[in-house]
Length: 395
Ligand code: LMR
Image 1: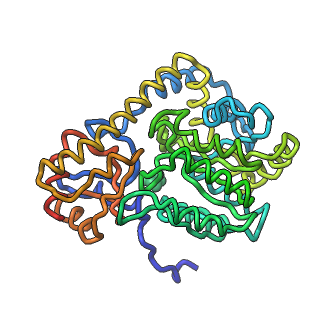
Image 2 (image 1 turned 45 degrees about the vertical axis):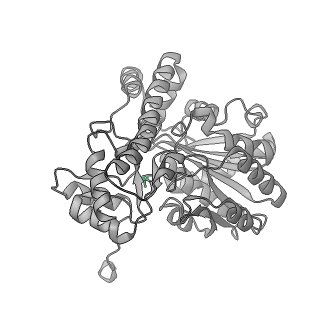
Image 3 (image 1 turned 180 degrees about the horizontal axis):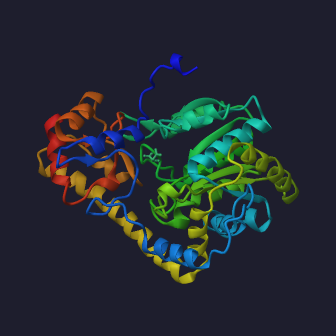
C-alpha cells in the first residue's frame, strides 16, 4: 500500500519552523509561523496560565470522560468572551462546543455544513490562511475564493470582495476573518462589516467567522465587533475561535465552534446534529486547555492578569510595525513600506518576490512564508537592524 506513495511538499508554514531549527546562522530570524515571541525571542507561558495550571493540578479529581461538547463551563465562558452580552446568547440561540484548537473547530464546522447541505461550497478570501482550503476540502466542501487583498496598492479590495460575494448562492458558506486577517493584516471597518452583514442576510449565505486573534488588534470587545454585528443581522451563523494566540496555549489545542440557530429550539436540533460529527472524528476534545481557560475566566483576579498580559503582547507587536518601517528607512530603503503600520495583528505581506524571499532565507537565515507573509511577533529591537539591512540588500 505505501510503496506507491509519492513524497509531498512540507507544509508551507509548519515546514519553515523545521528548516529554521536546522539553520546554524546565529542571526537567524523566524518570521514564519504566527507565534508570539517576547523581546528575547521566547514564547512564554503566560503567568495567568501558570496560575491556572497550578490550580488544576491541585484541584483536579478525575480524568473520566466528559462528552463530545467538552467542558460546559469552558463553553459558557468562551461564548461570553466571544459574543459578550449579545441577544443571541440571551435568546439561547448559541450552541458552543470545545474543539482541538481553532483548526479542529474549522474542520467540525466544515463537516457540519456538509452534513446540512452536501452541495454547499465555502468561499474563502484570496488570500487566506494557508490551511483553510485544505481543512474545508478535507471536510468534503468545495472551496471557492473571493478577492480580498489588493497586492498592488497594499490595501483591501472591498469592491472586488463585495462584487464577488453578491454572486454567492443561498445555502453556500462564506468564511470571514473576525480580525487580524491572516495573512494580509488588512481588516474590514465597521461600515464594511455592516454591508457584508446585510448582504449575508439578503442573499442567505451562511457566514462562518474565523476568530483566531481576538485581542490582538484593538481589544477583546473591539475585535469581536464584526462577528457581533453579523450575529445581530443574520439568523444563522458559525463562529470558530481559538485560544492558541490570546492565551498562548498553542500546543494545548483549545478552541471552540459556536453555531447560532434561528431560535432556541432550532439551536437544540443543531446541537444534536453537531455532536455526532465530533463523535466520529475524535470522540471528545482534550480537557487541559479548556480547564486553563475556564479557570482564568472564572476568576476576576486571573482575568485581569490575563488582560494585562494580552495587552502587553498586542502592544509589543503593534510597536514592531512602526519600528520595522522606521528601521527600513534608516537603512536607506526608499520603497514605501508604511502600509505595514495600517495593518493589524501578527501578519503583513512585505510584497517582495519569491526569489527575494528565498535569498533572505538562504543568505541571511530570515524565514518567511513564500508569499512574503511575515510574523511581526518575531521582530524585536535586537533583530530589527539585521532584518532591515538584509531586506535592503535583497531589494
Ligand atoms: C499561522 O498562520 O502561522 C498560524 O496560524 C500557525 C498555523 O498553524 O499555521
